[in-house]
Length: 245
Image (cartoon, rainbow, N blue to C red; front, side, top):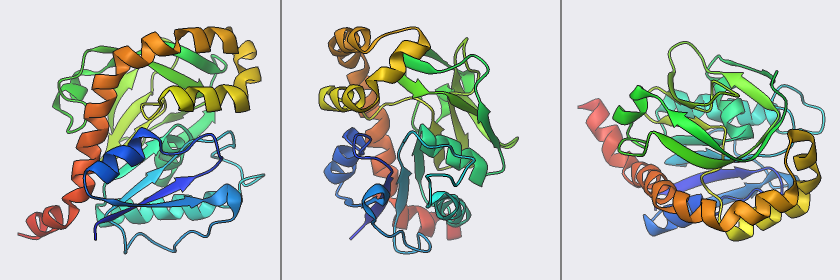
């Protein structure tokens, strides 16, 4: 059966709608909760896709992040094998490192709450983002940012941070923001990390108050993006055959 490895770092930041989209596409989802001690495989040879979720740890330090090096290795292996990859927030930063980019503290400070991103012209030709509105309001929750490697395609940014989404090669995406969330996910973020919002110029209460409207507006677009990614994972065997032809 087609399967996708999902690396989860902390309890509140599960795959949510990513997992739902994969299951609907007929993909078995193997969630490895590293915070709970789940082991990681040495490579992605047994998987058709890889998803790496977010978390509060630093992508550039092993301190409190024992699996960091192994995850960068998994992402590099997935890139080398041409597996579909989706990195979310911390996962996007790790993907940037695995591909030769850089991660560093954001000069503009933490970006937390609902705010827009602007899609680049290249996003209009992207397998996941084509056809989306030029501007999307999404949930941000990060203080570090990244520069993708030079061959990567920049897909989204905003006035605060230029790099918000990118693609490496044909099938690997990093998104700094959260497309996977639903109402329970927002509640889980706020329960775990709500105090962080004050330092970014908003409050947990403001994020919660805006959630229903923002989620409703985002839902048709995030559903489309995640369904497209799931379809790539589901079709990976056929894609490999096509690549060899």
